[in-house]
Length: 265
Image (cartoon, rainbow, N blue to C red):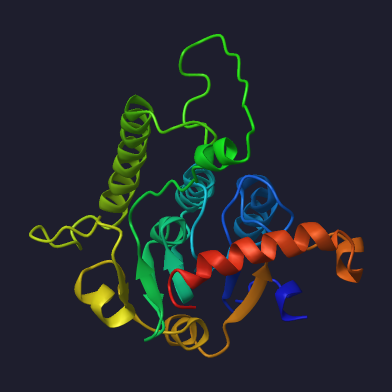
């Protein structure tokens, strides 16, 4: 009832946004701007939180969705003048680190994996298999680059060069984001953008994060023992809680499991 008594100061509140899983344009369980927009907006808008904390646990994914989510967090933080603090759990790698870097400060557990500031594109080549099976592939296009990187055709050096150019451009965007958000904290004599990963202590030395620490004790130390936490996250649709769309969930789970496995998790 204290909040309704005029002129009485209420206990500070920290809004906690959970960002856990792969970052992808589609999928009910995926992190993307469409799913997270109402969550993030509500976290910043409900009352006047003393801070917004991000619980980050992501191996990465879509660079575009990473950028959109990060930009939304920054816009609201600046509009409402609310500090944002990220807390890394198992991993904040690639797009996961992009999200963490949207915060003003980043903390992690001793064993958290941080980094992987790079861009990757993976595919396969099956043209020899088709030849051995006596299968003839027929593709008709208007525009010489329309079938670029077709996995059922021999690799074209021009296509590979074009793809590498695109990857380099995305990598430049990633580096620009990190340099802007971690300005003055990164060493000038060390290339941190090779895709390498580090644990929290080393990541702190390199300026990628601000230290080792956990959400609740750090927020209590900063805002007092009586600080309250309001949690926000994407809720699954009602039917999904009872096992609906099992095939889609299973496929997404395999893809996510594979992504985490890259970091030994």
